[in-house]
Length: 325
Ligand SMILES: [Zn+2]
Ligand SMILES: [Zn+2]
Image (cartoon, rainbow, N blue to C red):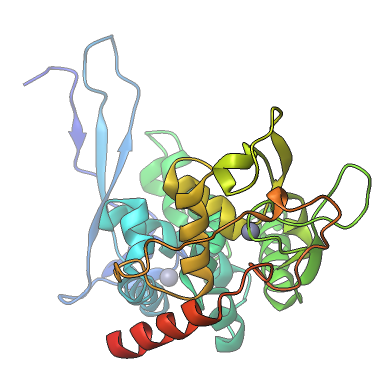
């Protein structure tokens, strides 16, 4: 064994016997047989390079409320498997979401309506974690114990009440972030018009839609600058390329098709008609032309692809979707 490695047999000096710290809110929690116990590792500084630093292995658990928070994180992730897959390891995903939910709990954002609002969809979960995982992780009592020095860590005092170890500044910051998230959730989307060089009406280069609904704070990122070769989007050949913007649907289609062209337009039309990607039919659509390749001065569309007659295609798509359902 490495002579510098001391795994100190530490116990919490400051907790009543028969209790362990709640790793989240910091109150003493019953240390019963059915309590789930975790090891909190606190490292000291290693004496010299190459040696493993000394370490305390301290036992922590969760109080009843904090155990429910962790369970909520588990339930939300199993209801939104794509969110979990995006993060990778299941354990990390749970930890991130639990930390974000702890932040809400710490500032008393616990009414079911508010929590439901903030966790309704996978996108909501991602937004919640982006905003609150890091401050929520810092807010947990385990972070406080870890930030103490190696010698002092085992005497980190318990919280007198749940989350009472938070500083007023920490609490205010968490409250502001939670309030911003809630405000965003209840905000109504607005029409964001396609930008143009001369300020006149413009549309998506492919589907021609002139406005896209988005939240005000996302307005800047709705439209994506794009340039395309007229012939590649079904128009007459020209020496110069066409410049403009594309809507989020067409931007995604361009990504999926690895470029602007007939494939991207096909994917955008299919997406507009609601055809799921697993239905292979209708993957060749004749007569597609991007809005930017129409004669200049053509008015933008109120609905995507309104410059084309999609009537028959729509009927075929609806029949297919009906059969697949
Ligand atoms: Zn707790
Ligand atoms: Zn478009």
